Length: 335
Image (cartoon, rainbow, N blue to C red; front, side, top):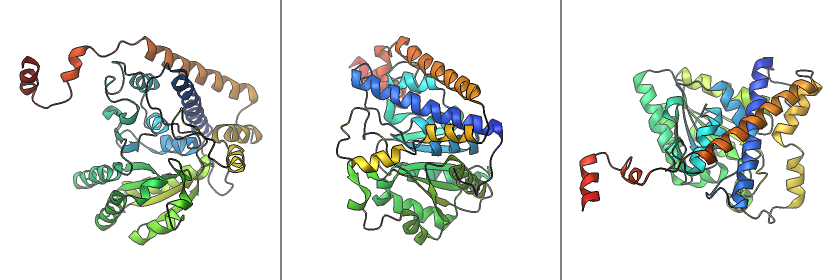
């Protein structure tokens, strides 16, 4: 952990560890269920990103907006989406965040400001810029955060969004989760410059490269950027450097990853590393940590059991949430 960043309160550290562990346990269970064929959905693991997610959960308020990607489990938990609702959506059940019709690529919960997720690489950034512009015009004093992978920095929408946000000094934080892989391609094979924060600096906004495995460093960087957005001082680009600890999807082969690289990254697996730090710095005792872990496992097991017991959407749900005009929908069903 960083020794140069302020250490948050004991309560904040507990919240962060709980969120990191919940993300990791639910992530691993989702992948296992997908491999077993019981979760019939494309699930995109977030293993390796838990420290950033925990920091996001600590700095964001309910009035702040977030736009995420298909690799969204930790982001959704960070923004306050209940795990039961998340898992029900993954299983396509009616109690899910989108009544079982959005699936894992399209989690959203407007009640907590988790505004949108998208399966199209880079497409969340223009959405976030629009939300930030609305917040600025309304004078709400809130921040908009958009998360995306390193691969999205090569997408046209990324450059358009960065340029527009910098020009209008919008209250948006660009959170780049640089996990070293664009699906199955290492970053050095698709980007002539792998220094993403350095590239982003050309848009004349503050850019920071952060150790994405260190939750305290992540917290300090995000707090500064979000506070800046709330003061309407313009956008910030944060590059969190870590490593994807699993395949592109929950069932994908991962044998193409250099074994020595993965082994080195696993030594910094966020939740276990943070656990060790909490004990070494006497923040919690071993029994206290074990109690948190037991609560998390119970919470995750409950969410999965709940999701599997929920009903599927009724057939008539096929026509809801599709068109704005219900008369037009009825005319189609009567045809």
